[in-house]
Length: 233
Image (cartoon, rainbow, N blue to C red; front, top):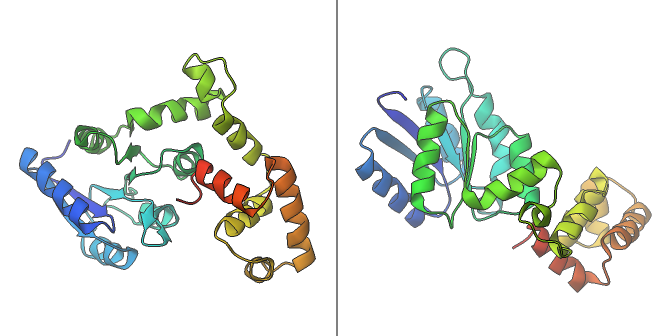
């Protein structure tokens, strides 16, 4: 690990962010934090500090999706053509968010309810070129890598409703997933058609298919299932 680690910390909860950065800095004088509360501030920090060691990124950035910004961060050239290692630091621990993060090529995934020691260890491990997943996220990682359900991994035999819902969600096509997400955001059919550039009849058909695949009864049931999947809070 290099002597000084220049760490971009992107999180819109400034109090939490500053407290964690101060605590870790006291324990590790070689940690040098650059704090950003939104994507614009993060871009400015990156442009002024091409030798950043890694970035810690929250997934929920005041209505912005931190994961959408990860690809931009990773595309920033660091020194000799290297990309910026990413640590996801988030409240989300559901399969969908974790899988999407892994697909983006992140190096670590830490949940905010994890001990701060796990974030500290993730920073050190990623700085040394490794990967690190919090204990809370690791079981889901195993499920994604092995194709097993979390119930099977933990030795449980009873049906796990969350696992079943997730498995059904994965049967949705890309457009169906987008429609489901917009419905979960309480968008109306006309709005969704406009956003996706589709006819209203097409969206209505997609909604019917989604309801059938996920066993959704009504709009309230859709919102409950969206919460279980981690698509909305």
